[in-house]
Length: 244
Length: 235
Image (tube, rainbow over all chains, first blue to last red; front, side):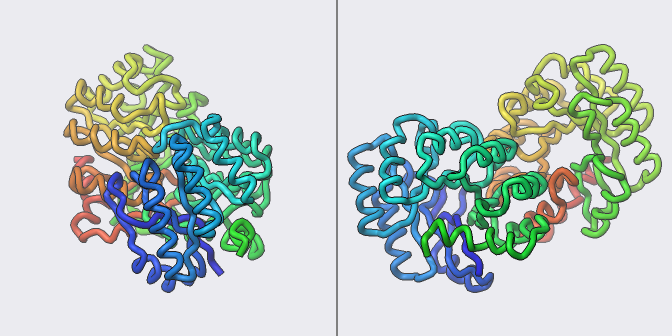
């Protein structure tokens, strides 16, 4: 089985790319992906259109069984975000929330985010953050994880650029941190981190449309893992986080 | 034919050339590794030069010197060029200064005088920012600059802007995490300013090449990126 832990769906004006749901379903069929975590496309969905974007994600998840929604709110809009969180977890039944601090305008460890994370703690839902430079470096995410030890936090892209070097110390100190391996080109660093930490907190993702499952599967092959470790990364760990 | 404009001498050159050959790569730009971190600078550079002497048809040798060594660095660079160096690799992040620092200028002047290519690591703020390299490219207009990694993470846009503003800038694809960024660059700049690079064996050649093939480019664009542009650059 394969669970793809991160995809963005819709038109992405900033990167001039897009992905529609029919393409995604066909893609999943071709590659044998059983479940895909879908999130809104980078853009105003994370700034002020999050209610509309979350509803869109809910609609496609209702239609296609293999899609699992993860929504977003913007912590700057507290009242609207609190109402939306209620909807995300009580009506839409999403299992997690995604924040993009550099797009939404805060440091991930700033207290402006706390009420959102407190909500996630109550719902036992996970948080997904594409990690990378400040204001969402792995050690900044780990600082948030330190404040909220009961919330599972996924560092998307495993540090993204040279910040792979913060992934290991972040995950070593905080057992509630996870990493998806997409868009992190440094296979040697991933191999080393998995060797030290074990495979229990690493996740497979295509991160379409930014990367591609074929590229990411090639990377997984290069990690030279045991079958059990590979299964952990391909679906077992994701299944636990998604509670499916 | 494929030319890889970004590799490092980390293990044996034979193992690197073997891997390259497996993927149809006929020529590599070979850079030192330890020297970038300002250790064993001359020894590491000379190993690159020796590898080139051994495999002159397969290797384009790049060297680096410590910009903080000032006159001594200039002297070393001249020596290395006389020994056959065809390119200068600079890594502001590990060399500890911004790309447009005056300490780099004497080295670029030598590169310009001897007409060798300059490849800059980019994408690690605050030192390796594409617009800092643009400052150099607008000053040393006869020198060809390669921005390695196309700005890596969020600096990809600056890398494209820098290339648009200076005809003597090229981008290498090594380690660029987002496939749409390469497409965006082709659209903005045409495929003629983009060069295939892998950063092997630091990064994985397989993954880096697959990424380019997944772009499903028209043949002409693919040929440009995989070897045509680099052949022109080497003339």
